Every structure is written in structure tokens, then in C-alpha cells.
Length: 318
Length: 142
Image (cartoon, rainbow over all chains, first blue to last red; front, side, top):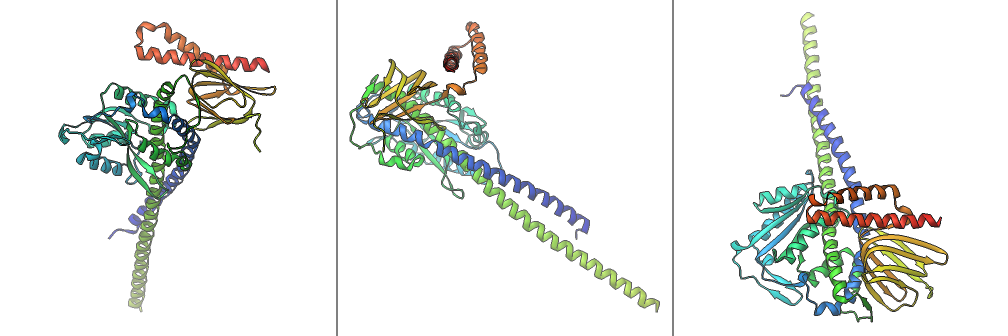
């Protein structure tokens, strides 16, 4: 049995850990609030972008642009949005599981669709070529564990809360798609449902699909649903031309989608960490209580024994 | 009640709402040149390029440097979507000057740059020049 001194030492170390996890919980809570606020800050932009797109809908229908081109899926680019640091519960392993699931059964990945148009790939599963872009340091690890081909890695995902930081990613995605290097681009990220619930999600970025876009914008801004693409068109003067304005707005929309995914992921990461740290704090508290009990029992036993010895000694003297 | 003679303006970037106010006149750098919009202008959608937005409301004037974006105008409501915009009084002139010098230095070593780097530096230089211009104009007014 451990001596009193050993138990005392363990109690002390556990209490120390508990203090740290509690501090980390509070830091994560503050960071989470900030991340959620920046998500909300995106709303007016998303709302307006959606309205402009809606008003360009007529041009949209017959418009030919590289981003709208639907090809048979042979090469896929997968963006993985993960965290930089660990200690956030199952946050990163959930992402890993989600991606593995998709890779093992790539039915969804193989279909390419925009609205009603849908092209099933005839390529065998094993011939499907997949490349990965990792955002966040742990993203690299996930791709490595999947034995995926990593083409680019952007560590330090917490810095990606600005549009300018997204631009290098956009360039890879847009240029390679237009160059037909990839036939489909998807992003895997963790959707922030609430402080308790986060969900790993897969979203198509390219080709630009109305359905996916509508879903994601509805997530950013609930009001945007009112601006369905069927709204009667107003007579707009469009300069220089609808084609050019659309060509201009598409990269912005992709940028917005990526930024949105990163912000959602940031908020999820912090709330996952907050929860993990809260659990750790509770566990440390319980452990410390148990050890305290054991220590007191040991101490009590020692005192009883000493008294017994003393009284035995004095009885022998009489 | 909404004032029919004025434009309700909102300038937003993906990060935040940059400016929200009532104005009388807006001059915007669109792809083909410069467009000035007054109240009751017909509905308008346009692409913005790098340039300066000038807002007038009576004798009050605002200048903003923008790096490109989109504008929508409808029923005296104007929404400007921008990547980045700085209001004249927010621009740090000294910083912009320094950044310009740095960019010019880099440009001098043109032959050592790849095409991509050259394009990035050129874009940055243009942006800094614009910031300086907008900031100077603003100071001249005061």
C-alpha cells in the first residue's frame, strides 16, 4: 500500500492539473465566443452576395464558365479543415472517421451534379485519384494516416479568420479546377451546431452547385432562404456585363465558402476543447476526492494503531 | 419613414460591416471607369475594381480605399461588397509609405522574381499607392 507521503504527492499533482484544465476551459470558452461572433459577422456579406447572385440568376442559366462545368469525376481535391492543436476531445478523429467513410465508399464523391444535371462517374473506385489540401497542423496528420497524397498544407488555421489568408487556398482550388486538373473539389470541416454538438461535414465547392450553395448560405444566414432563386427578377442594369459580374462573383463565393468552413471549424474546435477540458477538470476533481479519502483512512488507521500501541505499552508497565 | 431623397448605404466585407450610413451621392470605381450614383438611380449591379469610393452627404465627404468587389443598388438601397476597404482616416500613411517603398525595392529586382511573385508585388504596390492617395486627399480637406 502507498505511503501517506506518496498519496499526498499525487493529490498535489492532480490538483495542479485540475487548475490548468480549468484555465484552459475558460480560455477556450472565450475563444469560442469570439469565433462564433466572427461567424455572425459574415452574415451581411453572405446575404448581399446571395441577393446579387439571385438577381443574376437569369444570366446564370445559360452561362458558360469554367466553374460551372460538370465533368466526369476522375480527380478529386479534398480540403481538410482541422485544428492546429490537440486536447480537443474527438474533434480531429471525427473528421478522420468521416473522410475514411467517404473514401471507403466513394459513391457520393464520384457523383458530380449541378441542380438537375448529374454525371455519374464510370471510373473504378481504385482508379479514382484523390489529392488533399490540409488546413491546420492536425489536418496533415489526418491525411498522413489516410495515406493520402498531400499537395498543400496550410498550418496555423487560427490565422485564417481573414479573407486575405484564404486567397492562396482559393488560388490552388480555382486554378487547378479551371486547368481541369481536378473534376471536383470538396471541403471537409466540422460544422458548429451548438456548444455541445459539432458535426463533421462534406460540402462540394466546385463545380458550383446551386443546391450546395443554397444549403451553405442558409446555414450562414437564416434569412437568406427568403431569397430563393425563383424570386421575380427586377430590371437591373448590369455593368460591365452579367458574364463579367458573374466571373467576378464566383471566386468571391468560393472564398466565402472556404472562409465559412474555416470559421465553423474554429468555433467547433474551441467548443470541443472546452468540453474536453471541462470533463478533465471534473475527472481530476473526483480523483483528488478519492485520494483524499484514501489518505484520511490511512491516517486514521495509523493513529488508531499508535494509540493501541501506547495503551498496550502503558498496560504492560502497570 | 425612409427618406426618398437619400441612399441607404451599407459597405460589407466578409469579416464585418465596414460602414452603414445615409448618403446623398456615391462615386464608385467600376470595371469600365467611374460611376456616380444619385438617389432614384435605376437598379444597378456592377463589379468594382481597385480604387476609391467617394461618398457625399451635404458638405460631408467620406473617402474609402477598396481593393475590388461588387455593388448592388436598388430602390435607394446600396450594398457594396468588398474584399477589403479602409476609410481614409483609418489609413496609416507612414505604414503605407513604407510598404510602398518596400514594394518598389522588390520591383527593382524584377529579373529575380517569378511571374507570380511579380504579380503579387505589383498588386500590393497599386494598393499602397491608392492608400496613400486616399489618405492624402483626406488630410488636404482638414
